[in-house]
Length: 291
Ligand SMILES: Nc1ncnc2c1ncn2[C@@H]1O[C@H](COP(=O)(O)OP(=O)(O)O)[C@@H](O)[C@H]1O
Ligand SMILES: N[C@@H](CCOP(=O)(O)O)C(=O)O
Image 1 (tube, rainbow, N blue to C red):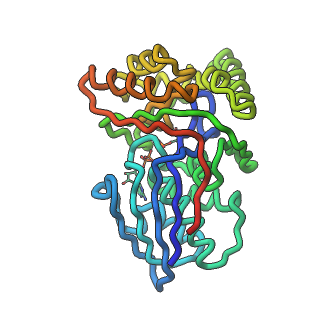
Image 2 (cartoon, rainbow, N blue to C red):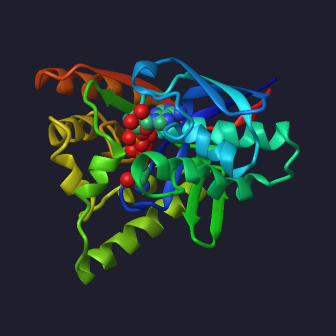
Image 3 (spheres, rainbow, N blue to C red):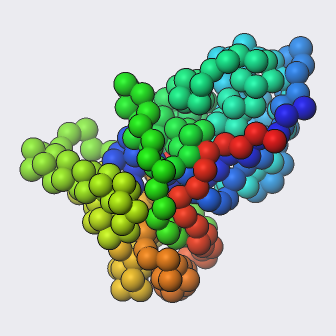
């Protein structure tokens, strides 16, 4: 039996819809894989009552199929489903790394990204790579059809998860079908600024690059209190704030010493609109770890 820990991730970061992602230091899923004649799945942990154990409906089933690696797969969820923290992707990433090792398939970490993304297609309708890439490879990742570029960055982050459920599938339905040229121009500027910030470990450039006028405003409607929480985090010293993945988690970049005050401000503001929330004071972390 092999055990793999794969981290939660925050995709998009505002300007990088379906492209940018970061591995978070915590929370994480822990997945155990053991060779078997057929695929079977057992799920425990946070939100496990909402996660199907049917291999056709769980992200890890699609990964085992793609690797032709039947196994008994135990998933201990640390990442709440429908959180915007790459919950479904964390399991898929862990399964891809574990089954690749168990069956000695010889794929590199980068080659495992599109394999793990097949699991994302099962739950959200699209095989987007922006969560599985950082969960497998760690750091800040730029995932495109040409492959994954990874930067090891050190940026303090606060992820505030409200007690609201937003499924990625539903949140993809509100994404506008088109954008104006002036919006493309500003998005390119923000994405370039964010990428430079990651290279320089500069939370101010990263925060500036977390802007977005295309996808985030449409999705903000799905999160009660989003704009108030964003303002509160910025007032408390966050350098940038946006929706994590498809939401409802709200993610803030900040300086090391500001994480606690930013987190408290975000929780208080969600509470003030009647929404319970919890906060992860975290940072950009490593990819899936095999034990
Ligand atoms: N291994 C898994 N872990 C988490 N969710 C899963 C898994 N397999 C299937 N799902 C389903 O995926 C959906 C959650 O995925 P998604 O909406 O993308 O949330 P998140 O943003 O947290 O990844 C839920 O409907 C859940 O039942
Ligand atoms: N690019 C995707 C990312 C979804 O992330 P998740 O953590 O909400 O699954 C999107 O924005 O739809």
